[in-house]
Image 1 (cartoon, rainbow over the protein chains, first blue to last red):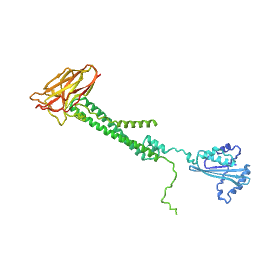
Image 2 (spheres, rainbow over the protein chains, first blue to last red):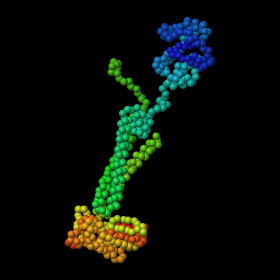
Image 3 (tube, each protein chain N blue to C red):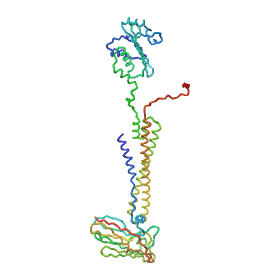
Image 4 (tube, helix red, strand yellow):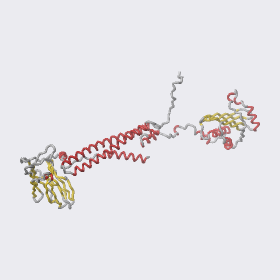
Length: 277
Length: 187
């Protein structure tokens, strides 16, 4: 006989037991309200409800009574299973398990519990439970990795840091690299302009035989040449800084990239008394 | 993303390569005394403009003869004699006209004459014999020489500096320190 006491409705529980354990015959008594949840308070817990169990055995003509209780607490649930022998009235098997809730966890744990007492556990139920267990560190596939952060920052400065959940450094990197890139572009455009002016004035210089114009165009062309050289050097310097910063930003993204923690530390609370002795 | 990253990298590399390209500082106008000085040719200098020209056999070739002074060491001159040799294997002399420098705002064309030996040498003489305008100062255009191609080839028109002369109004010789020829290519 099965006595289910759940603090939330699990309408599929009875049907699931019948379906999964076809070699067992279950009787469900929904009228039975007695809770066997305080057996630990008795001197001899195994025989706490001896007479009640025997009465139930005689009444329902069953060999065993399974008492299943599920209580929920936020994202966890507690399953307590007790198996009584109706011939002796004693508790012959008990399981108490406190678990993080998982998909169809209550039914799955009920199956595991009943499967355990009937000697019929399916692998799928075990697999379902393993879904809440910590995996072998070697098998853990990190969704976010330092390499992923580095690659993102290589594509766009600051992206990798943002991907790692940093707040300030993405803006700093993106701002710095943007400013440097703009400086490269600005100097390159000025270089282009100075080059065009130089070539135009050089052409005019070559095409005139008037000594005054020759002098004027030469002076202009020389000034343009000096400018094009200066802006070329500036563009190269800024491009170097941009490139170096870009690589540094990617390395920084790798350094601050998301990693699994090996050690967990509790924050010290100065209000607590010193217990170190 | 890979596509975009590739473009960004190519753009950056292109910008850097483009920025690395420095133009050659190539000032070589024969009328520019600094350019001549950079080539080791002292002033005053007799030059032709343009320094090189490439024409077809149907074209005529105009070459200007110039005197180029250094800005800070100019001397007034009253007469000049230029002896010019040209490659007569593919050029024949057509016309010689006075340059703008010696027919300036006063419109007083000096005594300007020339002789041609019938082969490849032209002698040009210019004198200022006026009472008001007796000399000239500075860089300027002495004469224009027009040639007709008679064949194809490549050679230079040049001054014979040992014969060329420049004098001031006291008939004192002003030393000519250099000359530059002009390359003519007829295709």
